[in-house]
Image 1 (tube, one colour):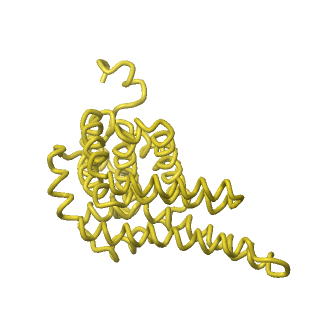
Image 2: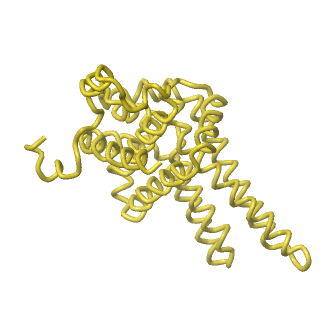
Length: 273
């Protein structure tokens, strides 16, 4: 799994580096068209802050996080994921492909947006309710609240792969959720690492504000699409992943072009590549 993580990080970096200008233009387009969802995010973050002031820390943080989370599953985000998926798969894609993708995935992404947003809010409300049960019910309530937290974590892990699957294979809502669940359950450590990386990028964007408007969402799109592409290599036929044993197999392996042959030092000495 360490090898998959290392390759995912390297490929995500170089994919973003190669398309940095496109990422900025795409992110700006996303920001302009996401005003309704940005407004909802601001509203939920304000409600979350009010809950924190009122002493309901868990509910406040949870609602604020959902405000940012719902931005990532909007129809506008689906179009962004469709373009960055082409970059992650080493295919040419222009920013103008954003609008056809927005039209193509609009209905399905609205369905996913409702599912993830309402699901996350319901889990937050349930967790807050169970946490405040009095007396003898306090311990069972804390246990139930913890279960809500684990359920939310799984929902967030599903979200990491749902849009990449949706745009990669033009899947239905049910199909993308099912495939996301299978990959998540079979690769919990990898999926959690991917979620934490995406969360860190979004946190930088939210704190800086400018980062969210200019580049951070596109970077998350590149990261999650590249992350899915990398982990799916695990499920390639075994014979394609085995080390070559005969001279013919060795020659065939040598003739294959590595997807990303650049290393970290090429960032400082690109002329040596």
